[in-house]
Length: 190
Image (cartoon, rainbow, N blue to C red; front, side):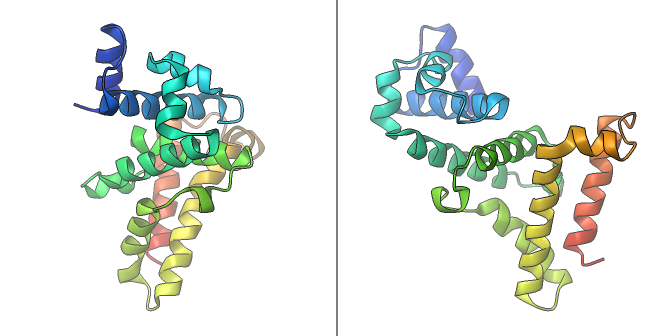
């Protein structure tokens, strides 16, 4: 059962019960709200209401807002990195979309993502994808960082980039294919 399925099942049945269901519901609800409005504009009460739990349980399981943001970032990183196919490097996958948007919103809201997040499995995966195409580990790491900057830039500034470059009429799926192709070129050192 996916985390989102667990939230839907438990909310419809009157709310999550037990630590695992509460944690799952809170992480999913927080990630969704952070993607929609950013963590700074999302209260613990908003998250608790969406998750179908008492706000005290959010504090009990996660602590303060910074700790919850860190837990959401780690959760999204693990969820995204768990994808087991080559297409998983495509930002067109909805899990990647939400992950990049949450990262971008956290950064824009002033959260120090580099310090809050404990593990960076997505970045490790990008470095691993670049490594066979670069003679040095540092070059592979720079390629992975450039792909992350490309994706975060589109998430933060997409509407401006589309309008200012004449791409406003380009269908979103075609634009995403172009962005993905650019990411692959970067990872492959071309």
